[in-house]
Length: 185
Image (cartoon, rainbow, N blue to C red; front, side, top):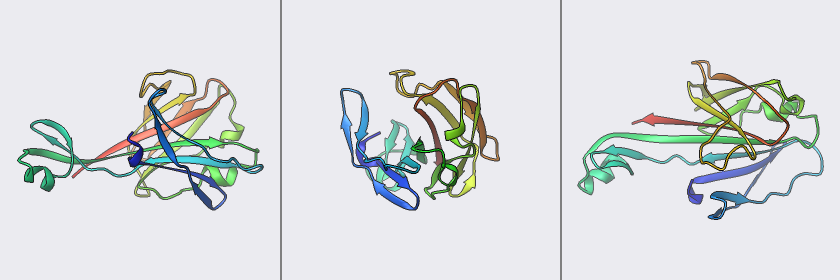
């Protein structure tokens, strides 16, 4: 994602601290640093800011119908893609109050299983919310070192209309859940 379209925060309790990101072409990623708390649970949450794209006779272009038609483009359909990633850092096992906290961005993944208690072979359950309501959405689960390919996931699932999905965690490590929803305009 372009760095100007992503917001990342370190959350501990009710405190939110922005994480400054920079593009790292060598590893093909956005990178940033955050000071982890000495104790207590923390969570890093990243969200892509809403963008407007349109399907045109020339392919998918950034911009809304009005702007693109003013440039002479024929717009077939407008859309707003949204994505959400969550990385939970378990500094201690008293994680219960933070991991299932609804934070309120447009698109959000809420864990329903305490990640501090997950062991290899266990299921982790999550709910996807769009504007605070459950939504049918694709979810991808991967872990650090799984693949260098972009958008490569160890497992994929689609939530039901209730926004819920479940995955099996296969090994200890740093895991990430990602979802993306595109709303038609």
